[in-house]
Length: 261
Image 1: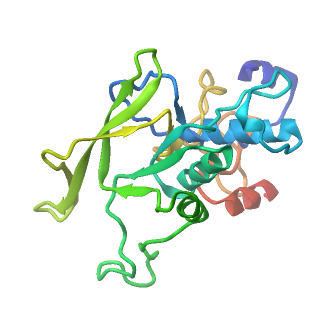
Image 2 (image 1 turned 45 degrees about the horizontal axis):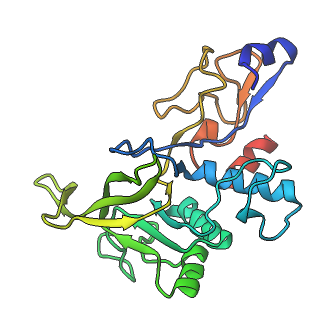
């Protein structure tokens, strides 16, 4: 709403603490169709809508001039592309809106039930987990919403500029001669998944740069704003950065820690 130059002219110092919410996109054919949104746009609009309504029930069924716009999943077939905590939040929020169905695409294979030989302690255990969204989906629809080793290839138009589904292929993973995992598409594995709402939850690339794109703020190789922990001063005098926009996508406890700093 306000350019950085205007803010700097009116106040000093400035603290950048707006997270790292720039999502990874899936620029395949049909990406510009209506009904395809980044996960954070969906979740943020949902929270704003709830706050505006005073947490009133069933507000997601209709829009209202008194409430900020939201992205409603009520009565829709929802596909969430990508997992993690953000994907789980999208699954659970869609269910609570009243989605007809929810499917979750995972590019990687289903994790094992216990540690694999190449994942010893004290490494983080890469094992199969059921988060709250998965449990709610299974309770409501009868099955776990996740489908693994699947790659989106095209978003399909309903003829009116809205998404109607996704064309996909199955993939398999294997190590190359150097020991690195490589993905390849499985022949004759094309599928079609109907969808009225698609939510992109494939991780984050860094902080939103729209506010500061015309400034001289330095960034690190990952696109985060450069500022030493403890001082938090950026390359721009009087401008400080903390939390995920400085350290990258992380846990809320780190944001709290840096905010206190």
